[in-house]
Length: 458
Image (cartoon, rainbow, N blue to C red; front, side, top):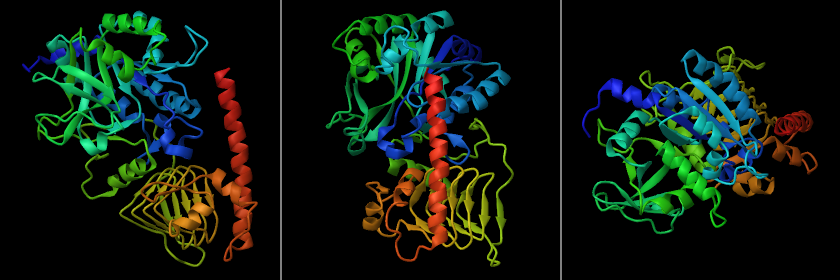
């Protein structure tokens, strides 16, 4: 592609409206998304998943952004208001929240295409020439200016961001496409069991990243056509793209690192194993995805909490951490942390061992507790002498979620269910009391959260 002048690139950005789809349930994350949308799930310590596509927008110089929400969006909306509405004002950007509001029917958003159709008047009023549609639940760094300028220079009606993925990884997981020698899309199938193999990259296929660039008039025309079809699922991958590839110019934009000519980092953290692995990958000496990137910073709401604190317990044992990320507001009171990520407000008590774990915000690990390869949900209170991650059968019997990769998920709701069961030998009364008190406090929080969400939806 011919090098484009910077002012031309900025002109394209100024004529672009970004719409981020952030209403996904993330059902494969099981209980982690039982009370919150996947884009609002915490990641990497101080961030939420949605912070990554939003940061890409800011770093790419895109100034008109709308976020479409739906599924259990209360905490996500709070995060966006507290962190992003103010941030975007400082950058001179416009930032809109677009919750499902039944504009054109009595239904909530029926699919990705329907979510945009329900906001078609907002799209028209924005007056943008191009619409950049982004998935709000992936972890990656991408300069969208490259995709936008390629879309304009190729005179495409629609461009689809794609990434080269091994066939075994893509099968049944991603929408995949076939392309000709100029990367024009000639076929598109949503989550096939036998993806089409790339001619130029044997063993790989082109998987959709869920990011699209539309010419605005073309998008409005296709959304309107799709909305009146009783046979459509109103989804981009299943309906919109397959319907237009024969008669319109639909371009594949390959996401590649131009400096190294390699496939950049991109992860769909849609399963417990993928979520755990992606967070743990941040702990290596030279992580493939580096949060400490001054050239491409990750923005978002940073909790106003004091620095992490390591103190001695009552028995004089010092708190320690090795190969770990410890967020602000954490207190390690004589506990030992190894290859783990502690989110803001976590507290680990004396002689507790936390090994290869993710402790989400405001969770607490009691004295002498031992956790290995465990995800502890936010606000959980792990009792004294409690153990998990060492005996899969025992963990399953206690009602904990076990992933295919053997990662244990513990939520407060699961711990509450143990209150009425027999207390195993070795658990003292103080542990039982802590578990019971944690159950009551979490129950109160859950009720309040439910009322807040209900009030918002009304």
